[in-house]
Length: 440
Ligand code: SAH
Ligand code: SF4
Ligand code: F3S
Image 1 (cartoon, helix red, strand yellow):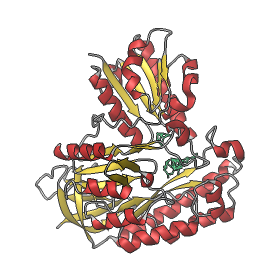
Image 2: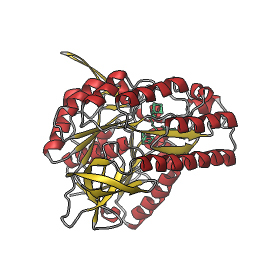
Image 3: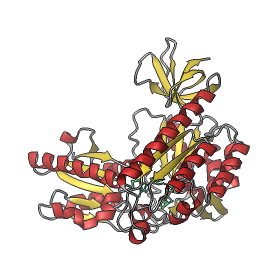
Image 4: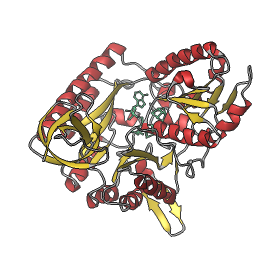
């Protein structure tokens, strides 16, 4: 039996796609390996979101090419977003035998079969229909607690800096019945948490025979499966997150009280140029609505520093918005121009690297303070935590997350805790990243 090894880069959707690829290839008789040196087929499931993501992958392609020289006959493939972005130019290096885009995974068994020396195979066709709805992903997580479920693919938003619409194609939603069935299935297998994935989950929409299903309705259907199945989702778009979604979150205890709401910038001029299609005031109104329904909801975000023509004033607007919201955590990036995007075609990437990096550092330092303040506010409070396993630092301690998604560590108290158990803890102390707790 041929063995397949996959390295995954990029977002959670890519992680879930790797699980889909394993399922498709298992059906075709391939076994999975976690050791590169054992792989007959070595794949990188790739990300193009920023230049440094691609640079890292080029480094891995070199390593795979060396493995191929050592073991002739090994097949090296690039799949995912970088495959879609660079298409057949990836073959020019002669290091790669296979290139497959995100909508081409059903063709992998045939492509692999057709590979011959000097006959690489490529399929980068994007689809308007493909959602892999009927494929049950082979779960690659280690602890069997938390599963990803893709509810839609692609993106119709064309934010001017973003490569995703080009690498993943047009937005399409998946049949809600197949989503609910998959969630039921993982729950039956012992999973206690599902994360519903899409680039913009709030625009989920399915026209069923018995009426339309929007994201609020889908959330309610998944939450109704079982009260001890936690439901998370990612990513919300500030322009689309509806009152109905926020209120549905409030109605179900098992819908986790954490929203990732990427803001990108606090400056209206930048937001306009980024084509985000909301204003600072609109964004703050959404935050107010979330907090009015769920006062303790954890709110996290993504921020881009140094987008085209960003001034010190624009940058200060971002810092002030971060303070105003008081984010619990954030992913923060320096703007990276992506070829072919609206921004690359229309606006010079004119903020000098040292200015971008200085602004990014200020953003990160502010967020470090906000994260610590957020965790300090939790000292003395009690939470229900879903156990993920032993803590990395200390085997006598377990770790798990709150409903809001904050990481807790706590002594097990002698009896080892099973991943997937719920326990009550009280917060005694904290770091910027972790709540230090005791069991109660
Ligand atoms: N669909 C999600 C985000 C997907 S990409 C949304 O709409 O928010 C994840 C994050 O990467 C984005 O939120 C953004 O902050 C960042 N990002 C995307 N393109 C980027 C670029 N060209 N340079 C720097 N950061 C970028
Ligand atoms: Fe990219 Fe914007 Fe789509 Fe998010 S919503 S994936 S940032 S184009
Ligand atoms: Fe990267 Fe593609 Fe996800 S570009 S962030 S892997 S959708």
